[in-house]
Length: 298
Image (cartoon, rainbow, N blue to C red; front, side, top):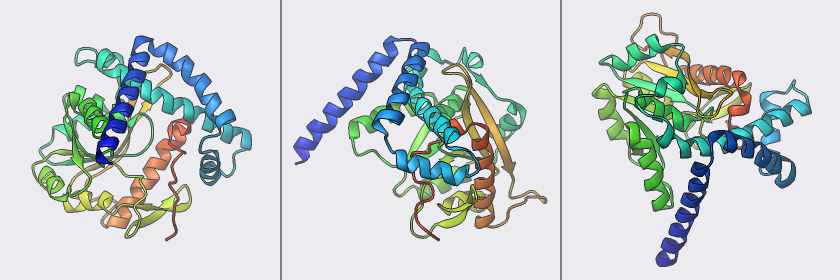
């Protein structure tokens, strides 16, 4: 069985690399046009994850009409397809000499000051915008970071994807057993970037997200308070043109500040959920409504 799995994994890897080659052979504008057609196919014909998407949108935007929900869902599929093409094009298009042509950071002074500080920094994001490009662009700006992710079951794809992530200085920590490494990173004043909107399962901290309780990992608050780390809620939002992004700072708290609004793990998680929700409302088509954010009950 392991031998057959290796063959299947490698065949899958080759198929993905061939698809990436096709995307790299055409322009980002052509990829954008293709994403519109494929998104229509996925939503109207294949109806992929349609029940989950409709349920999530009904929770998040109960006041919106069905047509608006369909508009957001169609935009989400376009966004997901564009994400893949942008990741394929990024190593060839975006470099340390031209990142200004592709990214905007309205709060550059605030963000840079924190990144240059000797204290640690926790960056909380979510499945909003092109979060893979967020870490990539942060590295292009000269700020290395560490992220936590589960290893992919396919070792070939795992190595390839992590080579993209690490190309500009985004280092990956295996989700399994990463606690000590994260502690050492924060003690050394490093930058930790996390996707905080993943289902946490047993032992989660529940907080309202779009008005309904959602399970969140307690680590989201633990790293902030335990590491005494300033924490920012951010998102890498795509602009009208593919491969052009705005790095948005939603909010920032410092647990050592006298006026810090959060002092417990539930308060940190509730603050994160509110700020992420606020960012999502600015670009709802760029959120992953395909995953079950409200799975389970408190």
